[in-house]
Structures are given as structure tokens and as C-alpha cells.
Image (tube, rainbow, N blue to C red):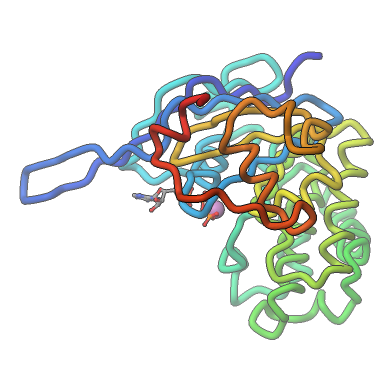
Length: 278
Ligand SMILES: Nc1ncnc2c1ncn2[C@@H]1O[C@H](COP(=O)(O)OP(=O)(O)OP(=O)(O)O)[C@@H](O)[C@H]1O
Ligand code: NI
């Protein structure tokens, strides 16, 4: 099936000044590759600082000016250059950002969702209805529409971000840690909703720390480590002792889950050891 999103050999570094004139490049991503096809939830898992959010920002064209990017990004078979990104962002590609600081503190939640719908090209007279419908889908009552972000709990604010990203019915949704701070019931509800979107033909890139919960909805899982993609495996390969997983690091992640008895490796591996198949 044709990929909705194809990230190929993506590398990223930041230019930093270490003196008045001395510049050096700080590498953050190296040879990151993955695809998202319509109808799938593709989970991206990996430790904190592995580069998962940076990849999301790179796809959305939201990196700061000192970022240097190489490799290719394709959306629906065509290169995702700056011009195309500007036209598609919010309409065809949407991001649920990791931080709730992305909400505007001075604007009521309902209005922010209406703006997102408007940016996605929905006619102005339809946006109040769409905003209400989207918020209620995530269990947010009408009073949340009137609330400013600082009066919401962390979990409620996260669901407002989710409503903003989904109000425009984008084909590709990148959800960066969308369940952080949610209670188990709401967490599963959000994951199930992402699954429903995929079943309706959308492509979902689900960035998470939580392999166990990701596996309840994902078709495929890509494992990130120290700025690179180690392996992409189908969800059903996360089974037994992980015999169908290629990389020892992926197997170790699987075996360390509570349901597998917290089998921790004897010692932490170096990055070189993680990259090797031994
Ligand atoms: N603007 C920036 N300039 C320089 N380095 C940065 C910048 N933004 C992020 N980094 C670095 O890039 C690395 C990857 O960060 P990123 O936020 O993508 O990790 P992550 O996998 O999303 O982690 P988490 O699971 O904690 O969200 C980190 O080491 C971070 O310090
Ligand atoms: Ni992140």
C-alpha cells in the first residue's frame, strides 16, 4: 500500500556557537526511516531524549532556524517541501504536541478548537458545531469550551489539544505522547479513538514511552534509540520471549514490561552495542 508518510534517512543537527565565531553542529537524529500507511497506527517508542519529538517537528516543519536537516520526507508520494507543508499543515497533517504549553493561555478552549477547524478549511459557520462535537467526543463538557487553559487539569488540557488536532479531519495525525497525565480510563479512550481514526482510513503516528499500551492499538512499532530508528516490527512480533524481534534492544524493551516479569538486562548497553545484532 502507498505510504501516506515516508521518512527516509532523515538526519538532523543543530548549529551551536561555542564562542563568538566558533560554530559546531550538534547531531540529534541520524538515519531515521519509517513509513505510515493509511489505516494503521504506527507506534514510535524509545527512551526520553531519543529524538522522537524532534522527528515529529521535522515532519511538521516546526524546527528552529538553526536546525540542519538532510534525508527525504514524502507525504502521499510527493516531497514535503516548505511550500507544500504550509499548504497541508493543519488540513492534511496534524500534530498533537507533547506539551500542553502549546495551548494559548489567553484564549478560551472552545475558541482554540474552532480556530483549528477554521485553519483546516472548515467553513466558519460550521466551526462551533465541529468544536462542540470534537470536545464532547473526548468527554469534555460544554463548560470546558468556556474555560481558559490554566483552569483545566493537565489531562483535560491534553484532551483539548487532541480536539484541536482532530477537528480538521487530517489524513495523517502525529500524536506525541497523547496520553501523558490521563487516568487509565481516559488513556484507553484516547488510544481507542486513535484506533478508530485509523480504521476509518487515517494514518496515525503514535509517539509514546509506553510500549505496553501502544501494543493494544498499534499495527507496527518502530523503536528509537539515541537519535536513530533501530527496528520496525509488526505488533504481533511482540509475543513470547520476542523471538521474532530482530534487535536485542527491542527484545529487552519487550521483556522488561511488567506483564513479562520485568526481566531487566544485566547491564545497560552502549549505543554501539545497541546498534549491533549480537
Ligand atoms: N532546539 C534544540 N537544540 C538543540 N538540541 C535540542 C533541541 N531540541 C531538542 N534537542 C535535543 O534533542 C534530543 C532529542 O529530544 P526529543 O525531545 O526529540 O526527545 P524525545 O525522544 O521526544 O524525548 P521524550 O520522550 O522525553 O519526549 C535531546 O537530547 C534534546 O536535548
Ligand atoms: Ni518527546
